[in-house]
Image (tube, rainbow over all chains, first blue to last red; front, top):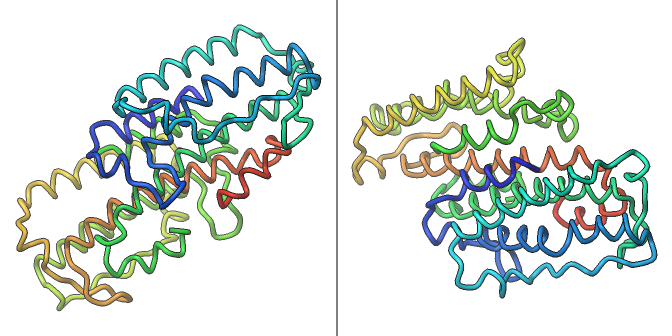
Length: 163
Length: 163
């Protein structure tokens, strides 16, 4: 969790625009879009959901997460700005999370997901970590795909890997 | 290319053993296996193939790459040792690569891949980069999968992402 902003900064800083903006087709994310999406998660999703579980339990369902909000929210911002913003937000999130001094009893508390129904705080926090990792995976895959033409016959090996 | 060792170090340093050794089932790689595999690539594959293209052209086919050599080669080594080793080897590889002062004429030179047939030096170098990125993607995915149980109902969303 703490590592994600640094991993993304090293992977993405000072890359050329077509690498940063390259995606996998309509309605898919470029690396630039992913960072905006992670920012939205910090701002509107993870903390708010954890708070709801702790304060209201299952009584107040989570707000559905807007997976495409970053297409507007990131407008006019450079990738560097987004990477810095995400780094700051994540730092604040983790400071807040530590300040809660969560107990085992807290972790089994439940909330209501608008689609998935009852979920525990522990499941929410695990999903937060898994979500980071799948987006790191996605960025690696999307960046690799930009080489589809350049690798020539080697494409045969990469297809096996869901390329 | 230069960034890969740092990305992997930040992502993997000081993680617990079951995260580092977790894989996706029989004949798949854990993060630990991937670093060993990348080391094998630096030691036996990329440089040797580039050299063959430049020195012998298509006359001397590449040696097939042993994708499972690291299961023996990494034995007894800690992940930290492997990450350091990979960092050093990659640094050497890039110093060597720069020292070649490759021209456009060099980049279109051809070699013989044992399975894929004729390939250019440019395709080899592009594959080297794409190979790094797909293994970063793989590590993110494999690490995320360790949360399969913990995320509870959220698994429904992750399945969509080839989880």
